[in-house]
Image (cartoon, rainbow, N blue to C red; front, side):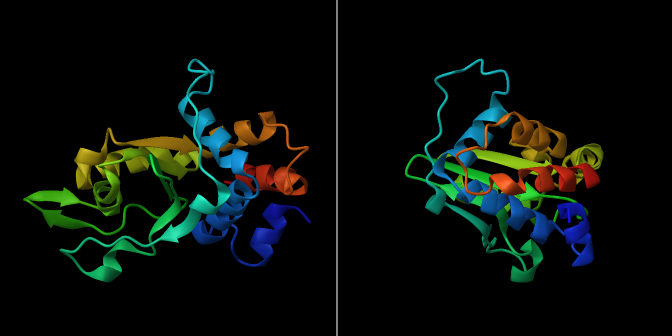
Length: 192
């Protein structure tokens, strides 16, 4: 049974939590997977060969809960979808399959969202922020960010599902414990 069929059979074919967990488990399967993935997203043509990330698999987690102090605690949802932190850097990845921005509030007369909350918590470190989404969702999210949290427009980069598929197809998975799932994950990405 392919992932597409499996995710749909458990009613999670378009569920952000299920898909985030699937990718997070892959990233945690080996110390190098997440580091290579982030490098690939930032520098796909390997223009900067010395750009290296050094996150260990135990420094990666899913659903890191961060709350803004000036609005309802329920507003921010369940937290950062994929979060990695070491002594030097932070990576924040928010997955958006169906939903738009959450945790909307006003601070200092400016509209904010979960994106500002997450970034502001870690902005004093070397922080990389990403929105992971199906390709068809990108333009909708760009417009929502411009309207609801425009200060984050140049802070968050997009990781499109097509980019994740490219990475999965190009990476050599022979030495990884989750290598048998790669085709299923690619099929699940195709579904989106």
